[in-house]
Image 1 (spheres, rainbow, N blue to C red):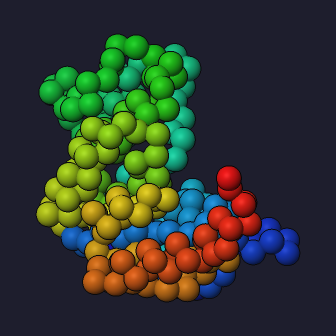
Image 2 (cartoon, rainbow, N blue to C red):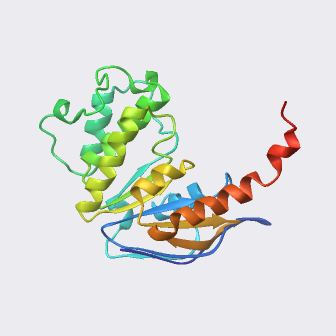
Length: 226
């Protein structure tokens, strides 16, 4: 369980998060949606203990950050570390003993090559493998489907379902609504640094249509395509 109360961040007059409230339970998948710059990544960084904020983030876990696996939109890797060494390092950080890394290489990554040479999609898959191997109780996945091939997207979707069945708490941001529809129990809409709407599964289609109407409007007509 994670309870978010009055979380705010501002830099001068620039408000990033504004009195954000939310409650995330075990065994559920939550989607966080919003336009670029709406504060999704900053919100995730607050929960993961990577960003200072005002307000309160409470959990049964103490410290919370030691139980979170954060998949960043663009994972960073040291220039001279192989995929295998990265996975081992991440497991060591959680005192997880790994006996056979190769058997967990479900994405078929070249683990003996430097991770920095991987493609964007391969880097994301390696980072995801690492936080899964850490056996974290809370998974924060920032754009997990972006830049990843269709076969891996299918696999990631099934991984999320399995994590839910294991009573994990999963937070996902995505600009691909179909992936949220396939994985989430609830969706929070973040706008101008605050959650303006919480939508349950039965209302996802209404939210999607609302977002389409807001985003498209008369913009296609303005193009005057010929």
